[in-house]
Picture: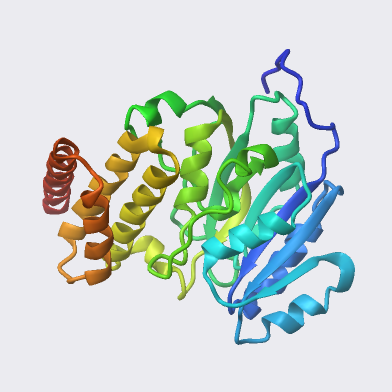
Length: 314
């Protein structure tokens, strides 16, 4: 691991907040909470945000007593859970964990070591390993990247997309960075998306990708769309609405926002299903976008669309 003269401004043994978001995952929840509590790094608080579950989740959460911080809220989606968990947290480092996923025991210790390299490291993402409902390894691999310092701020401001970023359970942040853009916007149209949380992190801060598998990402019936293109319209909606949020909250990143909308528009064209919700979001975005930018968005979307057709025919 590289050393740096830029010593971290946080304490060597900082409090780490693990925020677990849960909705109707009683069959996985205990394993997820236990994986957070059984970390080799001890200075942690575990916050479990239950998003109005209708199953036995709340009783499972209550059974942990004061070992965790429980938050019971009305159903509002993953985005609202991020907001609620961050608001209740006290840690200098915040790590997210989906209630169907599992942390490996050394996860937090490894992440803290990265943040202690330099105060300029504001986020740390790592590799995940896909497993099935029973936590058995799947043949497919999730994002697998080497250990490397990353700074995408200039490229994102110029309108380029970052490389593929991992799912929620691999995302860790300095509190000071999250405080720049949380609470995040929420919408019933896209209640479950981590795009804003991770896109804004790489757009606003320098970070570190840790090339180790530190969590297991469970693939099961409720989220099997990870391997499917059948829900292309949902991906279109996610890109377009996150572009609209970013442009509204951070106008200096409008070129990046336009790029996200282009990707979303191409996915909208790829999907044969008529989606009035996505169309409404898109129209609102275009109404506050110049004619030149609209033209660029459509041309770029057309390029992505044609490229996808070539890929599918090969």
